[in-house]
Length: 234
Image 1: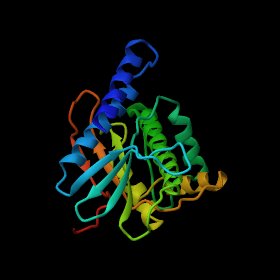
Image 2: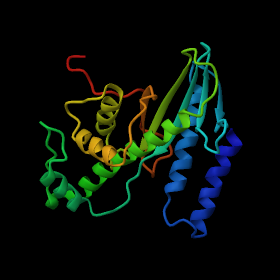
Image 3: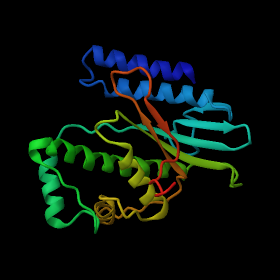
């Protein structure tokens, strides 16, 4: 596992140095995977961890297979969400005009206070949550083995703590896991988008984890498992 992860990191660095890649996104993703792997290996419940185990009948892989000391196995897919620059303000204005936001919620942004950038980051990040989740669900369909209640699936979404915040993942996770979230601005927009594309969630993922690390730092500043919308009073 370690050699494969290090090779990915070195290849990403080489691609950036030679100009094959204009951004450091691949390097960021490789570093994040290395740090997630280290956290798994240091966990008290860790028996062993496999990297990119093969899936039957497909060329796709799931990033990590975590075997616990209790006899469970947990598949983790790790995705770094870093929205690219774009025209988010026109998309935000259209969302407001056409009523894309969920009833009872408001997303108030001001173009004079980085509103365009914030609009783009928030909308694009939510779309990435949706896309990566649907992609993971297709992989889950290819997982073999006994259905004995000891196999689980979780996603780790990595961010820099600025372009998107943990609260956005909490909203998405809540809507995904129970089908609704009163505070989720983007639930209505997401549902509309999926209807147009004839997509549905299988809801086979048991939890979403939040990993935070700025690209200038060598260590994560936050890691939360199974994020949900906080319950008032708890």
